[in-house]
Picture 1 (spheres, rainbow, N blue to C red):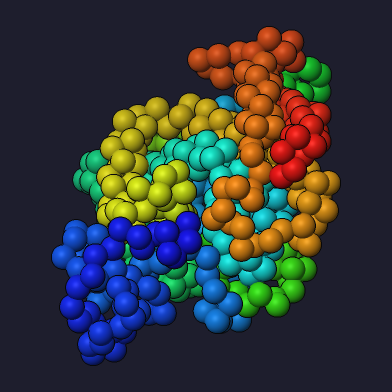
Picture 2 (cartoon, rainbow, N blue to C red; picture 1 turned 180 degrees about the vertical axis):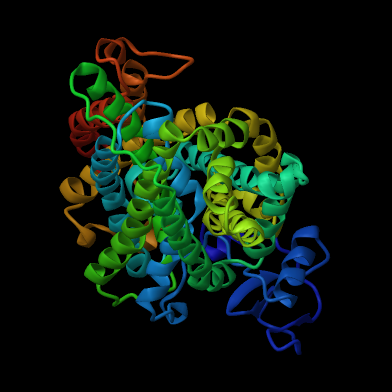
Length: 515
């Protein structure tokens, strides 16, 4: 949405505070604070925006970031954002699923983790390169691929994804907190603690999120190194037996779908966190920074999770703790007994609180997706949407706590399905039909008549859904193709079906509508 359009409902009023808390009559019907225009007047929107500005909260929504404000020169800021967001316990817990859910051994889990992570990370790194170039958030950028109205489908799905991710992360943190002091903190208490921490940071916006993520990975990394040392000393690791055959193939595909869904889950808001990088920033540097910032913690934590999970196969103590308290119980068995005791419990608390780093991108970007769905929703201040989203994921997290493994596996796969469709449409549109970055006129981002109509994208989306239905392998539904393997090939089929449909219909759409 353009600034003029987003401010059309704003009321005129008297003087308002500027960034230094002085007062100015401003220009016409808007004032400027923190280099962002905001409304004046007595409406709820205007009051909320001025309140946010007074406390240095980000009040910019989905408007394009102008070049003069793209002053964040640190590539490390781009990399550390994803490094911290993934050097967390939820990434560790994902790595355990190969052994706990699919009955795989260590080495086949590791190979699956490596391959499907690379597959999922590449789109995230690529989409990030658009942020500095265009100054657009990911869902707004997506209008160039899906059309002004077609993108609303993906924005809605992204809202669900952001809230769902936050719920997954919060459940793992609650499990950890519940193990401390013999379960003195109830599950719902742990959920509330993590939810509040997430809300407190995302409330202040882009800069606060980046500052937090820049340092949040350090204590978590230290504790993971302690986990490695303690687990090695336990002598409970086992490689297991590498299986072959169609059952093993099905397990690899199903586990791989969850790995892919987690890694590529960041694609739908990749550019959100580099829009303040200068326009001339090297795309190669951005790509490399995001690939490395995502790749290292994903591989490190997931492989460590797979290794630690093998301990439940050789140690009754590990197995009993895991059965009773999930991932939190497993880490408790590694860190607390024998010598660490109180320090081990302290490590669990820090590890649980680090989950906030994974939640922050979700809760920040969900607001941008909400505003993309409808211009009227942009009239509700960002800080209000942040509060609403936090309340929703809090409500989901508590029941999800009691059936975490199945919830996590099902959710990861579903995320992989729709993002595979997103990528199957956006990538050919960029490379084949727009022929690279030169095919964009960024000023058209808020002009429906100059954007793609979106009919071919919507049709391809429907075909992709059909592919997912045929290939998904879930507790509540097994597609006919998945049943033949048996294993989950939902994201592969959804990508293939959507890609073929889009390539077939998009040329006709261009010929008929010219856009």
